[in-house]
Length: 198
Image (tube, rainbow, N blue to C red; front, side, top):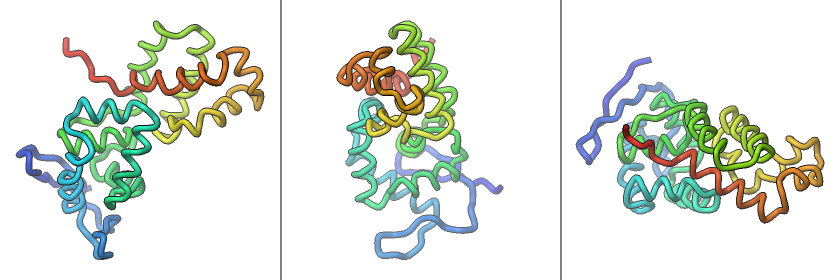
């Protein structure tokens, strides 16, 4: 597939793949190129977060991530378009966070598997063995399916899947609902924290 470089207003170039069919549309219904979509997204992102640190913070919590995605969708940058952009920047195995970070800051995407592996190393030091087993399961779902598996609404279905439909067994292993919610949303920051530069 042919690749092209797009220089955005920050002076940094991004690489995209040329695609024959367009998946992007202006609000008035006319098609736009991948480059035009990327330029439009780049122009809107400062309205949602001021820097990389704020993007990481927003994306690290299920409720603020959902609000960010809803806000982007209202501006014409819905989940389907972001998934199409994943393909164009050759980041299908990455997180939608990586799409936003790449467009906004030219950060190289990393795979969900790599992101989960880094988080698992931290999780192993902060959570007990039963919590680690459940969080490892959540991470495997995240790697296979994507960031939507980290939405707060997915917690109960994930517990049912892992504990053979027995929420009582899950509570016996992991604690009360409030503790479960804190654990589920709390561990996610380890997926998105910035790597310390050695």
